[in-house]
Image 1 (cartoon, one colour):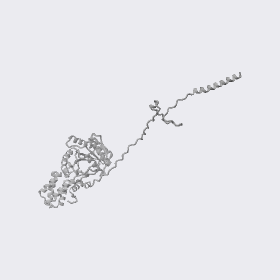
Image 2: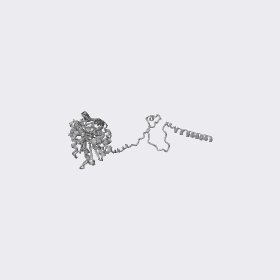
Image 3: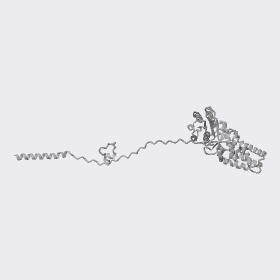
Image 4: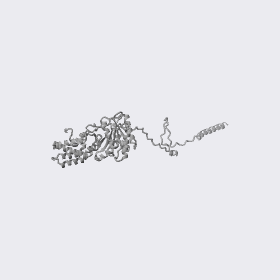
Length: 405
Protein backbone atom coordinates (compact mmCIF):
# COMPACT_ATOMS: atom_id res chain seq x y z
CA UNK A 1 0.00 0.00 0.00
CA UNK A 2 2.76 2.32 0.87
CA UNK A 3 4.50 1.44 -2.40
CA UNK A 4 1.36 2.27 -4.39
CA UNK A 5 1.07 5.77 -2.89
CA UNK A 6 4.75 6.50 -3.56
CA UNK A 7 4.35 5.43 -7.20
CA UNK A 8 1.33 7.73 -7.71
CA UNK A 9 3.28 10.70 -6.25
CA UNK A 10 6.22 10.16 -8.59
CA UNK A 11 3.86 9.84 -11.56
CA UNK A 12 2.20 13.16 -10.68
CA UNK A 13 5.56 14.93 -10.43
CA UNK A 14 6.60 13.69 -13.86
CA UNK A 15 3.32 14.87 -15.42
CA UNK A 16 3.66 18.34 -13.92
CA UNK A 17 7.26 18.71 -15.14
CA UNK A 18 6.32 17.70 -18.66
CA UNK A 19 3.48 20.23 -18.84
CA UNK A 20 5.78 23.00 -17.51
CA UNK A 21 8.26 22.45 -20.34
CA UNK A 22 5.74 22.17 -23.22
CA UNK A 23 3.39 25.08 -22.45
CA UNK A 24 6.02 27.96 -22.58
CA UNK A 25 7.28 26.72 -25.92
CA UNK A 26 3.79 26.76 -27.34
CA UNK A 27 3.30 30.40 -26.17
CA UNK A 28 6.60 31.82 -27.64
CA UNK A 29 6.46 31.77 -31.44
CA UNK A 30 9.56 32.99 -33.36
CA UNK A 31 9.32 36.56 -34.84
CA UNK A 32 9.87 36.91 -38.61
CA UNK A 33 13.35 38.23 -39.59
CA UNK A 34 13.74 41.97 -40.31
CA UNK A 35 14.20 42.95 -44.02
CA UNK A 36 17.66 44.00 -45.08
CA UNK A 37 18.17 47.76 -45.71
CA UNK A 38 20.86 49.88 -47.34
CA UNK A 39 20.17 52.93 -45.16
CA UNK A 40 22.55 53.40 -42.22
CA UNK A 41 20.63 53.18 -38.98
CA UNK A 42 20.73 55.98 -36.46
CA UNK A 43 22.97 55.35 -33.46
CA UNK A 44 21.39 55.26 -30.09
CA UNK A 45 20.90 58.67 -28.57
CA UNK A 46 21.03 60.56 -31.89
CA UNK A 47 18.39 63.21 -32.33
CA UNK A 48 16.03 62.15 -35.11
CA UNK A 49 15.99 64.33 -38.22
CA UNK A 50 13.15 65.02 -40.64
CA UNK A 51 11.42 61.96 -41.97
CA UNK A 52 12.25 61.19 -45.59
CA UNK A 53 9.46 59.44 -47.43
CA UNK A 54 10.59 56.22 -49.02
CA UNK A 55 10.38 55.93 -52.80
CA UNK A 56 7.67 53.92 -54.52
CA UNK A 57 10.00 50.93 -55.06
CA UNK A 58 10.53 50.56 -51.31
CA UNK A 59 6.80 50.75 -50.64
CA UNK A 60 6.34 47.88 -53.03
CA UNK A 61 8.53 45.74 -50.81
CA UNK A 62 11.69 45.43 -52.90
CA UNK A 63 13.75 46.14 -49.81
CA UNK A 64 15.88 48.83 -51.57
CA UNK A 65 15.75 52.40 -50.42
CA UNK A 66 17.31 55.09 -52.69
CA UNK A 67 18.58 58.24 -51.02
CA UNK A 68 17.13 61.53 -52.44
CA UNK A 69 19.41 63.56 -54.74
CA UNK A 70 21.53 66.18 -52.98
CA UNK A 71 20.05 69.69 -52.91
CA UNK A 72 22.03 72.40 -54.76
CA UNK A 73 23.24 75.07 -52.35
CA UNK A 74 21.49 78.42 -52.93
CA UNK A 75 24.00 81.20 -53.51
CA UNK A 76 23.38 84.43 -51.61
CA UNK A 77 22.09 87.32 -53.77
CA UNK A 78 24.88 89.38 -55.31
CA UNK A 79 24.44 93.14 -55.38
CA UNK A 80 24.83 94.69 -58.87
CA UNK A 81 28.20 96.38 -59.41
CA UNK A 82 28.21 100.09 -58.79
CA UNK A 83 29.34 101.93 -61.91
CA UNK A 84 31.99 104.52 -61.15
CA UNK A 85 31.14 108.11 -61.89
CA UNK A 86 32.53 109.26 -65.25
CA UNK A 87 35.80 111.09 -65.05
CA UNK A 88 35.34 114.71 -66.00
CA UNK A 89 37.57 115.91 -68.78
CA UNK A 90 39.27 119.27 -68.91
CA UNK A 91 38.92 120.69 -72.43
CA UNK A 92 41.91 122.38 -74.00
CA UNK A 93 42.00 126.18 -73.71
CA UNK A 94 40.42 127.86 -76.70
CA UNK A 95 43.03 130.60 -76.98
CA UNK A 96 45.42 129.74 -79.79
CA UNK A 97 43.59 126.59 -80.86
CA UNK A 98 43.59 127.66 -84.49
CA UNK A 99 47.36 128.04 -84.40
CA UNK A 100 47.77 124.58 -82.87
CA UNK A 101 45.52 123.09 -85.56
CA UNK A 102 47.12 124.84 -88.52
CA UNK A 103 48.49 121.57 -89.92
CA UNK A 104 44.87 120.43 -90.41
CA UNK A 105 44.53 123.00 -93.20
CA UNK A 106 47.11 121.23 -95.34
CA UNK A 107 44.66 120.62 -98.19
CA UNK A 108 43.71 124.28 -98.39
CA UNK A 109 47.37 125.18 -98.14
CA UNK A 110 47.93 123.36 -101.42
CA UNK A 111 45.68 125.88 -103.16
CA UNK A 112 46.72 129.05 -101.38
CA UNK A 113 50.24 128.25 -100.25
CA UNK A 114 51.44 126.54 -103.41
CA UNK A 115 49.08 127.49 -106.21
CA UNK A 116 48.75 131.21 -105.59
CA UNK A 117 52.25 131.77 -104.30
CA UNK A 118 53.73 129.98 -107.28
CA UNK A 119 51.87 132.34 -109.57
CA UNK A 120 52.91 135.39 -107.58
CA UNK A 121 56.54 134.29 -107.66
CA UNK A 122 56.82 134.64 -111.44
CA UNK A 123 59.21 137.22 -112.75
CA UNK A 124 56.60 138.93 -114.87
CA UNK A 125 52.97 139.29 -113.76
CA UNK A 126 51.13 139.80 -117.03
CA UNK A 127 47.40 139.65 -117.70
CA UNK A 128 47.46 135.90 -118.18
CA UNK A 129 49.02 135.36 -114.73
CA UNK A 130 46.45 137.58 -113.06
CA UNK A 131 43.68 135.59 -114.73
CA UNK A 132 45.21 132.38 -113.37
CA UNK A 133 45.26 133.94 -109.90
CA UNK A 134 41.57 134.75 -110.28
CA UNK A 135 40.79 131.18 -111.36
CA UNK A 136 42.69 129.79 -108.35
CA UNK A 137 40.73 131.94 -105.91
CA UNK A 138 37.38 131.12 -107.51
CA UNK A 139 38.31 127.43 -107.47
CA UNK A 140 38.94 127.75 -103.73
CA UNK A 141 35.32 128.92 -103.26
CA UNK A 142 36.25 132.49 -102.42
CA UNK A 143 33.44 133.64 -104.68
CA UNK A 144 33.47 135.67 -107.90
CA UNK A 145 32.84 139.12 -106.42
CA UNK A 146 35.28 138.68 -103.56
CA UNK A 147 37.92 137.29 -105.94
CA UNK A 148 37.70 140.30 -108.25
CA UNK A 149 38.04 142.68 -105.34
CA UNK A 150 41.06 140.86 -103.98
CA UNK A 151 42.81 140.66 -107.35
CA UNK A 152 42.05 144.28 -108.25
CA UNK A 153 43.45 145.57 -104.96
CA UNK A 154 46.47 143.30 -105.27
CA UNK A 155 47.22 144.52 -108.77
CA UNK A 156 46.79 148.13 -107.71
CA UNK A 157 49.11 147.87 -104.73
CA UNK A 158 51.67 145.95 -106.74
CA UNK A 159 51.70 148.69 -109.38
CA UNK A 160 51.80 151.57 -106.89
CA UNK A 161 54.44 150.07 -104.62
CA UNK A 162 56.45 148.54 -107.40
CA UNK A 163 56.49 145.25 -105.51
CA UNK A 164 58.06 142.37 -107.33
CA UNK A 165 59.66 139.94 -104.84
CA UNK A 166 57.80 136.80 -103.84
CA UNK A 167 57.99 137.67 -100.13
CA UNK A 168 56.45 141.10 -100.68
CA UNK A 169 53.69 139.72 -102.89
CA UNK A 170 52.88 137.03 -100.36
CA UNK A 171 52.56 139.65 -97.63
CA UNK A 172 50.26 141.76 -99.80
CA UNK A 173 48.11 138.70 -100.55
CA UNK A 174 47.86 137.87 -96.84
CA UNK A 175 46.68 141.39 -96.04
CA UNK A 176 44.03 141.31 -98.78
CA UNK A 177 42.72 137.93 -97.64
CA UNK A 178 42.37 139.19 -94.07
CA UNK A 179 40.54 142.29 -95.29
CA UNK A 180 38.17 140.07 -97.28
CA UNK A 181 37.40 138.19 -94.04
CA UNK A 182 36.34 141.46 -92.39
CA UNK A 183 38.35 141.25 -89.15
CA UNK A 184 36.11 143.88 -87.53
CA UNK A 185 33.16 141.46 -87.26
CA UNK A 186 32.08 140.45 -83.77
CA UNK A 187 32.99 136.76 -83.43
CA UNK A 188 32.42 136.38 -79.70
CA UNK A 189 29.85 133.84 -78.50
CA UNK A 190 27.00 135.66 -76.79
CA UNK A 191 26.46 133.04 -74.12
CA UNK A 192 26.66 134.87 -70.80
CA UNK A 193 23.74 135.09 -68.32
CA UNK A 194 21.72 138.27 -67.94
CA UNK A 195 18.81 139.34 -65.71
CA UNK A 196 18.88 136.01 -63.88
CA UNK A 197 18.48 134.04 -67.12
CA UNK A 198 21.19 131.92 -68.75
CA UNK A 199 22.51 132.83 -72.14
CA UNK A 200 20.58 130.73 -74.67
CA UNK A 201 22.35 129.35 -77.75
CA UNK A 202 20.29 127.63 -80.45
CA UNK A 203 22.20 125.30 -82.80
CA UNK A 204 20.59 124.67 -86.20
CA UNK A 205 21.62 123.08 -89.46
CA UNK A 206 20.83 120.65 -92.25
CA UNK A 207 21.03 116.87 -92.06
CA UNK A 208 24.55 115.48 -92.23
CA UNK A 209 26.43 118.64 -91.27
CA UNK A 210 27.61 117.09 -87.99
CA UNK A 211 25.31 119.31 -85.95
CA UNK A 212 24.92 117.20 -82.79
CA UNK A 213 28.64 116.47 -82.60
CA UNK A 214 29.37 120.16 -83.13
CA UNK A 215 26.89 121.03 -80.37
CA UNK A 216 28.85 118.80 -78.00
CA UNK A 217 32.10 120.44 -79.05
CA UNK A 218 30.63 123.92 -78.52
CA UNK A 219 29.81 122.85 -74.96
CA UNK A 220 33.48 121.99 -74.50
CA UNK A 221 34.49 125.40 -75.86
CA UNK A 222 32.23 127.12 -73.34
CA UNK A 223 33.44 124.94 -70.45
CA UNK A 224 37.05 125.59 -71.46
CA UNK A 225 36.30 129.31 -71.16
CA UNK A 226 35.04 128.81 -67.61
CA UNK A 227 31.28 128.70 -68.19
CA UNK A 228 28.74 126.26 -66.79
CA UNK A 229 26.56 124.64 -69.44
CA UNK A 230 23.27 122.76 -69.70
CA UNK A 231 22.37 120.91 -72.90
CA UNK A 232 18.88 120.57 -74.38
CA UNK A 233 18.33 117.54 -76.64
CA UNK A 234 15.55 118.98 -78.79
CA UNK A 235 16.35 116.64 -81.69
CA UNK A 236 13.60 114.18 -80.72
CA UNK A 237 13.21 112.57 -84.15
CA UNK A 238 16.53 110.72 -83.99
CA UNK A 239 16.91 108.56 -80.88
CA UNK A 240 20.69 108.43 -81.20
CA UNK A 241 20.94 112.22 -81.06
CA UNK A 242 19.90 112.44 -77.39
CA UNK A 243 22.23 109.59 -76.44
CA UNK A 244 25.07 111.19 -78.33
CA UNK A 245 24.50 114.55 -76.66
CA UNK A 246 24.29 112.89 -73.24
CA UNK A 247 27.70 111.32 -73.81
CA UNK A 248 29.20 114.69 -74.71
CA UNK A 249 27.63 116.32 -71.67
CA UNK A 250 28.80 113.66 -69.21
CA UNK A 251 32.41 114.23 -70.21
CA UNK A 252 32.37 117.82 -68.99
CA UNK A 253 29.76 117.54 -66.23
CA UNK A 254 26.96 119.22 -68.17
CA UNK A 255 23.38 118.12 -67.44
CA UNK A 256 21.22 117.14 -70.41
CA UNK A 257 17.47 117.72 -70.61
CA UNK A 258 15.77 115.31 -73.00
CA UNK A 259 12.31 114.03 -73.77
CA UNK A 260 10.86 110.78 -75.10
CA UNK A 261 11.42 109.89 -78.72
CA UNK A 262 9.06 111.83 -80.95
CA UNK A 263 8.27 114.44 -78.28
CA UNK A 264 7.57 118.05 -79.21
CA UNK A 265 10.99 119.70 -79.77
CA UNK A 266 9.70 123.08 -78.62
CA UNK A 267 8.57 121.55 -75.31
CA UNK A 268 11.98 119.99 -74.69
CA UNK A 269 13.73 123.27 -75.50
CA UNK A 270 11.39 125.13 -73.13
CA UNK A 271 12.09 122.64 -70.32
CA UNK A 272 15.82 122.92 -70.92
CA UNK A 273 15.82 126.68 -70.43
CA UNK A 274 13.60 126.37 -67.35
CA UNK A 275 16.00 123.82 -65.86
CA UNK A 276 18.92 126.08 -66.68
CA UNK A 277 17.25 128.90 -64.75
CA UNK A 278 16.70 126.57 -61.77
CA UNK A 279 20.34 125.48 -61.71
CA UNK A 280 21.69 128.95 -62.38
CA UNK A 281 23.99 127.87 -65.21
CA UNK A 282 25.70 130.35 -67.49
CA UNK A 283 24.58 128.92 -70.82
CA UNK A 284 21.81 126.67 -72.16
CA UNK A 285 22.85 125.07 -75.44
CA UNK A 286 19.96 123.62 -77.47
CA UNK A 287 20.50 121.04 -80.20
CA UNK A 288 17.71 120.94 -82.80
CA UNK A 289 16.77 118.36 -85.40
CA UNK A 290 18.56 118.46 -88.71
CA UNK A 291 16.39 119.88 -91.48
CA UNK A 292 16.30 120.15 -95.22
CA UNK A 293 16.25 123.77 -96.22
CA UNK A 294 13.58 123.13 -98.86
CA UNK A 295 11.05 121.64 -96.40
CA UNK A 296 8.78 124.51 -95.39
CA UNK A 297 7.01 122.59 -92.60
CA UNK A 298 10.25 121.69 -90.87
CA UNK A 299 11.50 125.24 -91.07
CA UNK A 300 8.24 126.51 -89.58
CA UNK A 301 8.68 124.07 -86.71
CA UNK A 302 12.16 125.43 -86.09
CA UNK A 303 10.68 128.89 -85.84
CA UNK A 304 8.23 127.53 -83.26
CA UNK A 305 11.11 126.21 -81.15
CA UNK A 306 12.62 129.67 -81.02
CA UNK A 307 9.30 131.36 -80.19
CA UNK A 308 8.58 128.97 -77.32
CA UNK A 309 12.07 129.38 -75.87
CA UNK A 310 11.68 133.16 -75.99
CA UNK A 311 8.89 132.92 -73.42
CA UNK A 312 11.73 132.66 -70.90
CA UNK A 313 13.74 135.43 -72.55
CA UNK A 314 15.55 136.21 -75.80
CA UNK A 315 17.66 133.69 -77.68
CA UNK A 316 21.12 135.23 -77.47
CA UNK A 317 22.81 133.28 -80.23
CA UNK A 318 21.60 131.17 -83.15
CA UNK A 319 24.49 129.28 -84.71
CA UNK A 320 24.15 127.69 -88.14
CA UNK A 321 26.32 124.62 -88.68
CA UNK A 322 27.58 124.38 -92.28
CA UNK A 323 29.65 121.66 -93.88
CA UNK A 324 32.66 123.29 -95.58
CA UNK A 325 32.84 120.48 -98.14
CA UNK A 326 29.46 121.47 -99.62
CA UNK A 327 31.00 124.66 -101.02
CA UNK A 328 28.67 127.25 -102.50
CA UNK A 329 25.62 125.06 -101.81
CA UNK A 330 26.03 125.95 -98.16
CA UNK A 331 25.15 129.55 -98.96
CA UNK A 332 21.67 128.60 -100.16
CA UNK A 333 21.15 126.54 -96.99
CA UNK A 334 22.16 129.49 -94.86
CA UNK A 335 19.74 131.92 -96.49
CA UNK A 336 16.69 129.78 -95.70
CA UNK A 337 17.72 129.29 -92.10
CA UNK A 338 18.31 133.02 -91.72
CA UNK A 339 14.73 133.70 -92.75
CA UNK A 340 13.36 131.13 -90.30
CA UNK A 341 15.30 131.86 -87.11
CA UNK A 342 17.50 134.92 -87.59
CA UNK A 343 20.94 133.29 -87.61
CA UNK A 344 23.65 135.28 -85.81
CA UNK A 345 26.76 133.28 -86.63
CA UNK A 346 28.21 130.33 -88.53
CA UNK A 347 30.07 127.23 -87.40
CA UNK A 348 32.00 125.86 -90.38
CA UNK A 349 32.78 122.15 -89.95
CA UNK A 350 35.07 119.78 -91.86
CA UNK A 351 37.31 122.62 -92.99
CA UNK A 352 40.25 120.23 -92.80
CA UNK A 353 38.61 117.97 -95.37
CA UNK A 354 38.41 120.43 -98.26
CA UNK A 355 40.84 122.27 -100.49
CA UNK A 356 38.31 125.09 -100.75
CA UNK A 357 39.18 127.12 -97.67
CA UNK A 358 37.88 130.25 -99.38
CA UNK A 359 34.33 129.24 -98.40
CA UNK A 360 34.92 131.19 -95.18
CA UNK A 361 35.20 134.40 -97.20
CA UNK A 362 32.19 133.56 -99.36
CA UNK A 363 29.94 132.82 -96.36
CA UNK A 364 30.73 136.09 -94.67
CA UNK A 365 30.51 138.30 -97.73
CA UNK A 366 27.33 136.77 -99.13
CA UNK A 367 25.43 136.47 -95.88
CA UNK A 368 26.92 139.19 -93.76
CA UNK A 369 27.35 136.61 -90.99
CA UNK A 370 30.56 136.11 -89.03
CA UNK A 371 32.17 132.70 -89.00
CA UNK A 372 32.61 132.22 -85.26
CA UNK A 373 33.93 128.67 -85.02
CA UNK A 374 35.66 126.28 -87.42
CA UNK A 375 35.98 122.51 -87.18
CA UNK A 376 39.38 121.13 -88.11
CA UNK A 377 39.22 117.46 -87.18
CA UNK A 378 37.41 114.63 -85.42
CA UNK A 379 38.91 115.20 -81.96
CA UNK A 380 36.75 116.59 -79.13
CA UNK A 381 38.78 119.82 -78.99
CA UNK A 382 39.23 120.31 -82.74
CA UNK A 383 36.67 123.12 -82.83
CA UNK A 384 38.43 126.48 -82.70
CA UNK A 385 37.31 130.11 -82.41
CA UNK A 386 37.88 131.72 -85.79
CA UNK A 387 40.57 134.41 -86.10
CA UNK A 388 41.07 135.86 -89.62
CA UNK A 389 44.80 136.66 -89.24
CA UNK A 390 45.60 133.25 -87.75
CA UNK A 391 43.56 131.54 -90.47
CA UNK A 392 45.40 133.32 -93.30
CA UNK A 393 48.74 132.64 -91.62
CA UNK A 394 47.86 128.93 -91.53
CA UNK A 395 46.93 129.00 -95.23
CA UNK A 396 49.93 130.77 -96.75
CA UNK A 397 52.49 130.82 -93.96
CA UNK A 398 52.49 134.60 -93.45
CA UNK A 399 51.33 136.48 -90.39
CA UNK A 400 49.79 139.67 -91.81
CA UNK A 401 50.05 141.41 -88.43
CA UNK A 402 53.63 140.32 -87.86
CA UNK A 403 54.59 141.42 -91.35
CA UNK A 404 53.64 144.95 -90.43
CA UNK A 405 51.42 145.36 -93.43
